[in-house]
Length: 114
Image (cartoon, rainbow, N blue to C red):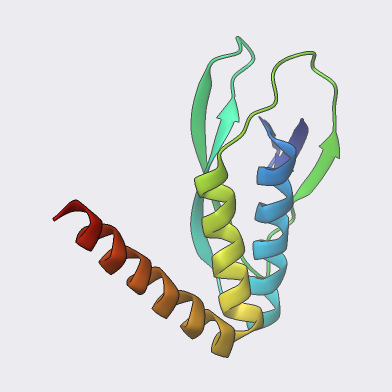
């Protein structure tokens, strides 16, 4: 697990989620852009909730490893979305190919249902 320190607060989240958030923040900073991003976090009582972060060039985010003894917080969908957004900023031409493939998958999935 990692603690994200942002705007004077600390937010406990999973390793992959924290890494994807930092990577996307870096990519936005390089593009001089900003976005609101929502990720899952764990409350001190162990319950799961979400937190929204404004990330971009002025973001000062720090993540540090912690061992809280709890179960790793995992959200593959959030991680995939953040990585896809990061790729779109780093490699815009590859992002268009990813989007086309995603559209074809949706069409194939729809054909399977009919």
